[in-house]
Length: 403
Image 1 (cartoon, rainbow, N blue to C red):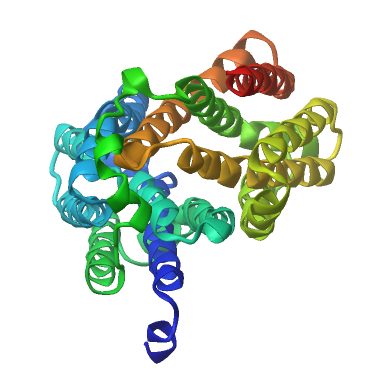
Image 2 (cartoon, rainbow, N blue to C red):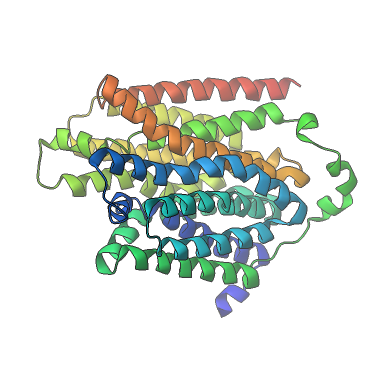
């Protein structure tokens, strides 16, 4: 740990927080390969019942997160972001341990709901980095944190599937719980949160700012909606990715592997590109970078609807990940720049709520469109959503500048 102790405080914070959000991403996504199989071990269900209970167990975490996250954000602004990260890490550690002891499906669903209620780790991680990092390094630092969560979400299904195959579903939950306790202690001893001098000097004026008097609320709401829609279009392909790949390769025997590569491509691109785009945003401006991200997304989604080979599909999904690499860190940076210090955790928590809504709405949207039309229509609708998203963001940006 000598190399870590030699780092500046803000650099050490970024490294530890990166690991924390990485493990959180794994914890949230590792259950995807075996959740329905685990539910099936908790009772005797028909096919429809198994589908219903599995869907409920998956979605309830995001639904509760969307509702509860702003409450934790408000408390974080009052008590500190590090404290809320410690609470969330400890809470997830306990919940993951308990999930390994469930004996019926309702216990699992209740624990998944509590997991959502005790969340807020990622939003407060972003808020802590935004407030504890030199302004010239905020974009790059938030870009690094974004790669942590994206990498965890990307690798989660692989890690979860490997652990469940090597050990058991129960032990997989226990191992994840242990790692979250490790995150708790790393944050407790290695992450430092200090007030900025500007926050101390301007404390009284900042305390008078509420949501009703927030000067940039229209821009912030636009960013919330942008986050929700980006997450929705990213998740919309999830229900049909294997089926679409099977259609492209004409029922080849390696459909599962190819579908995994397609699913992983956007996350891999985000991991590679996000830090660089974070630095670019610090130089050319985050609003301009977000507009570039919209253009890249539209240019990727439209031709995806007409692909005839899985190779081209992988390339275009990789380009979607590059779009995410421009959008996601820039959104976080713009949120931090337009949020008063006494509300920044609340703002990031609102953003997480909208992201959770997108996580639930995206797969539902994809399934509905695929049933009404076909798989390819999902990409055209996604392109349309991003165009609307771009127009809304541009309108709110001009409105904010005109004031």
